[in-house]
Length: 164
Image (tube, rainbow, N blue to C red; front, side, top):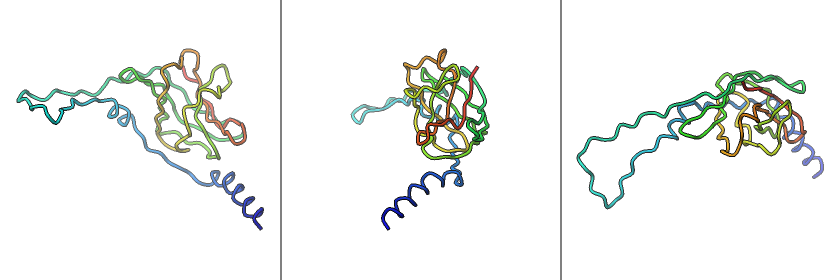
């Protein structure tokens, strides 16, 4: 009886993502709003009567762009880019992203047609919609120019995008 329950639970975990979509709606503004720093006033400071500082949104620079293609008989489409804002680099999966869902999906970088397991940007937030991932500063994007959606449970790729 217990083995049947365990088998059912594992089967559900492995198969259910194929039938359940998870849509994420992060935007570029989520990145830029996070990057804007505001002047803090300590509790003991006396507010001055000078006009407030004009806080302008940070400039955004697109470093590279690409399009997802499905791998290993999995479907995927949509745009992806590397963007730089105030010295931080992000992987931006655009709103057009639409991929087959699966268990245990992660976002990795890669190069020359191979994903690099050590460059894991985190769990895929959803199989549809816009998403943002901070890229660690030590990652060289001149060398690591591919984005992979990787199924860790089965060690298979779900999607790849080559950025140019």
